[in-house]
Length: 184
Image (cartoon, rainbow, N blue to C red; front, side, top):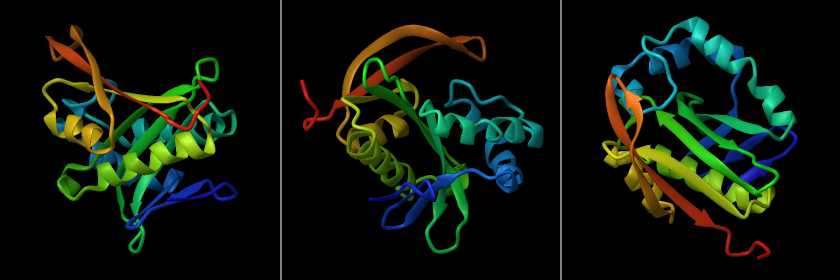
């Protein structure tokens, strides 16, 4: 993983994680206007419109510059094609943050979420000096849980029937990882 602070990009073997641009909005809307992504995420609306994408993207640079939230487009290193998004919150007080991501359904099963998540962990620990990164997943989303396990996160607990999605209560599974190099 290579982080370029000037351009606010993270480069991996196959991916470039970069800030979203307004020109990404049509692709974001197309990828997010998908029931299978909606049902596995806490906050994405469905249907998902171009306006939803634009209003979401317009806050990213300010959040990044305030060290509040880092939201990256997951793109192909060669073709620049947009695959999805990954974000990392920043809780300055506790030196931790939450990771969240989505990948367009047509790109599922290619390891993009795992590669991006591993890069975000390195960014959190090496660049931002977090002590811990955590993530939440619906218990019904086994693919997301596998991504978190592959990057070394451990299941920390389950909040039973913690949120309502489509009129049904869903369990939230919490995963976390401690930066072994951070000060205790």
